[in-house]
Length: 92
Image (cartoon, rainbow, N blue to C red; front, side):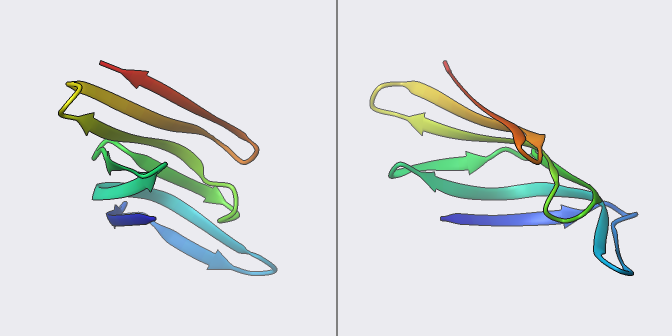
């Protein structure tokens, strides 16, 4: 489940000829995603860059889960484009 408020870069545009191409950046303002029963808050530094087909966005998205009881912060970061995407987890 994902719920997000996003903004578009000033030069964001879609072009339709033989196929749809999208150009510009989607910027996360705020939001959340539920992963494995845990709520992760999307970080406002998250970006999705579009440089052609909408099925091939370049992702740089980070979400944070804070476990108050255990005093642990867990970060999930998704980066990459197309089939070359990595998921990295870190904690504090």
